[in-house]
Length: 369
Image (tube, rainbow, N blue to C red; front, side, top):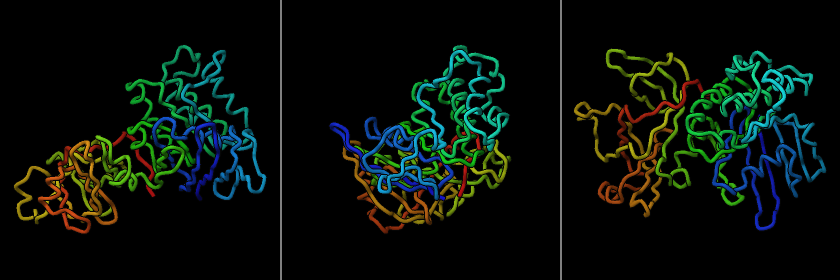
């Protein structure tokens, strides 16, 4: 099943023309700068914007198609909506706000207790919204949206009003939600942390158009896209905890084309995790390092091929995309290193990565496949 959007609309001074098709369920993040058109897409999907031209479908169910004249009103789309501000009913307790979501439908696919435990809000049930922290209010708002039994959950920058500490508090709950519920989620943000921790698929939007769309593991590692131009550019890998070696204080990760060693993590063997490798931490070599790998402090030496090189003159740097099997890594090096090593598309290269440079994202399992 897939979730597809085609949308064309013109506002004074701005036009949007986007089309994308992503797997469902899973979290699809609309990512881009403010004013790019992300929230306009959300409004059209929710039925809050009557676009000039659009087709929106979840699998075989079409929510809107201007070519045939089909336009389901918001109340018939079975779409849950979470905004930047929680918009809870101040006169109701947390339990009352959650029950309001249940009253909107007779379907009971997602249960009250399941949502309460998933979001960790059972101790809050008797409290009123004004007594909650920002992170707690957002968790309750998400719970209310889920209990309306949506077939699609829309989240329009739900963490934008929270400070860094509250974001860190709520992100694990969102990661747990996406790993547990079999539900498509369309999530708007311009936060890289939220993108890397939550996205299964990403749609990059710039000036009302789609720059690229696809799995986060592919989009994050493309040297020609805006994510790679950032100072914090990194590859995102879907891995499995394969084994622990307590004597060496290391954990072995199975990652598609290769094995990775990281500092030991307290996660069970077999669990799926998401790993981040910053481009600035990947060293490249154009020689057979196997002969002296044992003399190096790093544990990860991955043979690959240069897939592409993008220059970043403002940083006096170059970004090299390295294909490792059917996946990719990024390495930020100096233009001098590109010249000295004779790096060019198709050239064999080894990627050297310290175990301490590989970050395991979040503390919850992630969706795979």
